[in-house]
Length: 284
Image (cartoon, rainbow, N blue to C red):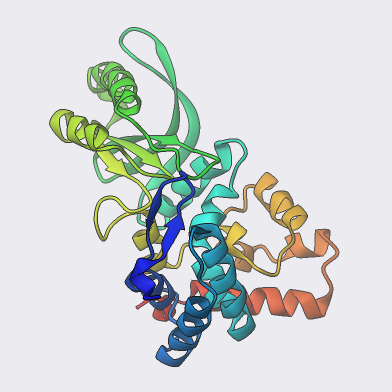
């Protein structure tokens, strides 16, 4: 049976044809060499069967990558790691704030702002130069759930209310000129169409094309702490509770691992993995 004739089951339940190119592309993005990519593809392809889930394909490729180099597996699990920032949306908001901070913005997370009509709790407020941007985050804990048009409709009304009040007050010192909606999943076509029409900027896992969340994270080496294959879930939750959301932040705050009682041997392995992840040269 040819590879193209295999049906696979996505997280949404939809059945689609297996794409060798997509698997190859996701493996190449980790920075794995050609031989490693080829070996993994051959092994996964040999184990395909009708109706296999994308999750099972992912798990097999992930296990094979981890045997090679743990940091390659960490990069491969990026999408899953974003979901692991839950169950609440707050760590995701902190993560988006941290990504913007390393992109040159001055950032505040979870602040209440006065609008013309009512007050609003804003997920992320970002300042750069003489401009201020309001960012609202929509976190989904399950794959297969997309942001429909209701989300940008609602957020645009809040943004306009705050914008009217903000720009009428010269004491703010900046112009509130941009509103963003960020999600860890995807936007529906109507959501994109509406946002283009009203001027909202959308950022999702793979939108805008070549500049979505996955592209920015890979390009800047700004991986969430949840990508680590060496930290336990308990250790990750401890770090998130201390507002350590980026791997590169842990490099500067090594004492957190001392609080967790991590052995020197494990600590060295963890920092080696994280250092390789955060080296920009690995993402070019």
